[in-house]
Image (cartoon, rainbow over all chains, first blue to last red; front, top):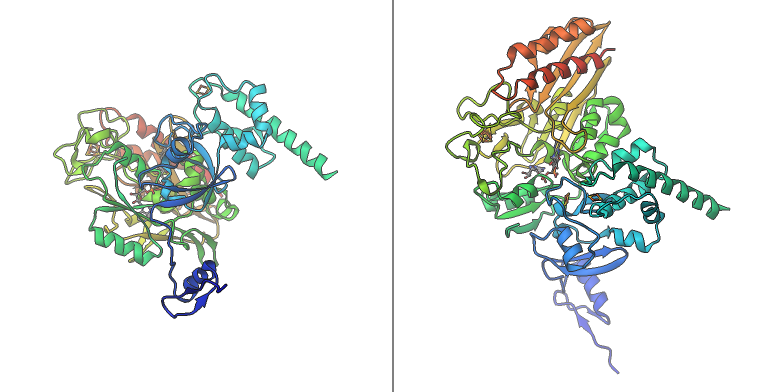
Length: 197
Length: 325
Ligand SMILES: Cc1cc2nc3c(=O)[nH]c(=O)nc-3n(C[C@H](O)[C@H](O)[C@H](O)COP(=O)(O)OP(=O)(O)OC[C@H]3O[C@@H](n4cnc5c(N)ncnc54)[C@H](O)[C@@H]3O)c2cc1C
Ligand code: SF4
Ligand code: FES
Ligand code: FES
């Protein structure tokens, strides 16, 4: 059977696979034969890849919470002032209510769900230390703490307080968070030692 | 938020041409932490038709120390400035200001260019749905003069318009104290001359001009700098008053001083008299206090904000003391 040929519309060179034609056109003619439709972003959320069509005014919060249904990300203020909507975006803890989804193409997002699914000890320690009353602010705290521990596995109590300074809790659970994060850091360090043995 | 068009600029030239083609109806978006708040609340009579994203321009995020000094790309995040060991050591006031700006999350998102181009926070101006169409929006009156002005200017308003909204940036006074220059797509501007008060404007930038880089001269021998911020809550809150001071010491005496307050006037406020006063003297309690006292004689507080004068005076004094050799 004859191979299906893909012909370049610019220079008539033929290719046996679409992928090869695409890379040829990108390289030789600086153009993408099948561009992604406008407004479609690729987003890796908790390890899962998504391709989502977004409107310019949609925030990352809206996409993660309403479109993908990950309701761990919360909205208190919607103005960048409380930390309830925190997600980890390419390694930085950011406010999803003040981030335009359309600007997140190709990025990686981690939410409280992803942290829980990985059985991260933060979650157990949050329960153990009673870090929540109503619980609405809790996922934001967990995500911010996870980003801190990723960057600084051995924080001091003051460093934990500093890192969580942008997370507000109406129920006043503040002192408990430091305990949970410090215990988690200790456990992770011990796990690390075990693994090295 | 209401609808708008969104354009990713691939190069600086492209961003400038987008701005030009929208003729003043498009806005640059950097971290978005200031701009999106304004758009969500619809505080302005003119909603932007388009946002031009400059984060897709690849070479605007860097910190470079050279023999001549320090260069920081416009899109460098405040957190990266706060954590940079070279900046902490040699450009101390800049790192301290970055460390005290807003909250940890906003420092991860907010850029240096966005910080100095941010809009005023006067609570009449920021009231949702353009509730107060004041002078600064092209309207007919200032609501703060008769209203609650506890967070307004203690050094008077603009001559022609009468706006009393303070400049809210924590980074601006550090830039001015360290004598930085702001590079744009058109020119280089001294940080001293960068801020300007007019309808819908906080800077001298043209509508199609983009900040690209900040340049700091290397600190002279014997120099020290320090930044202090006073805010209601230590985290998140905007400054009530902040102050950055940079002093060159020589043989136990002050050779040169640059002192800049913010949160107290319609733009960052150089405490010129205090600078003059401390020059040639040895820094101690008495001389620092005398220099800071000049703030009190210059101040013209409004009905609710006289308390800010004492804070400003104290911060000037403490930053001078911190720059002692
Ligand atoms: C809850 C909260 C608390 C805050 N607290 C503080 C505080 O304590 N101290 C403080 O100083 N700030 C504070 N801010 C403001 C925040 O620091 C600044 O908003 C931030 O640094 C702005 O950076 P950005 O990149 O997000 O700016 P954006 O929102 O992206 O931009 C702000 C403005 O600058 C313009 N702009 C941005 N980059 C350029 C450029 N390269 N050339 C030309 N124009 C440009 C934009 O068009 C826009 O008008 C706070 C904000 C919030 C929401
Ligand atoms: S102080 Fe300025 S911004 Fe505030 S109400 Fe008066 S004119 Fe408007
Ligand atoms: S909901 Fe985003 S910061 Fe409050
Ligand atoms: S537990 Fe209720 S807001 Fe924090």
